[in-house]
Length: 176
Image (cartoon, rainbow, N blue to C red; front, side, top):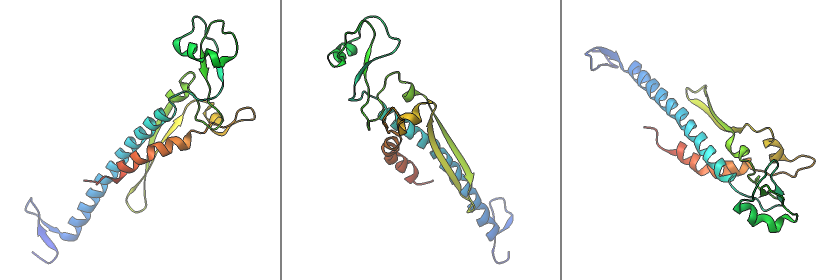
């Protein structure tokens, strides 16, 4: 047996350098798979943060929910004093004030999000992962940035801030 060679488990003589390169490649591939899997967990952390951030009522004006009829619910009866009008059937809700996260009226903004994880090979043999969630509601950008008629109700940065500690934990764990 020459210098830089060893006998593997199968009894074959192998070059040490080739064996080390093969083992490093195997470990790199394993870590890359784990990084992508952690991207999925990061998407879940973002989704959970989004559900927490967009969960409640605002502190703005009280409105009648469009296309609602019938007897007032318990929540609507609580809001009647702040409504300022006579309610002839239907339901009320309290909107968000400018600068607050959007209040939940129908729940559509809160429930219609898609998450995705994209991965691409990096030049150093690693992998770059992008984990993101995106609202499927057409009015999400209007709420986030405001329009001529609506003041902004920012929520994106609050979702990121809420999810950040969990995402840091996910990616900080040791890769075994």
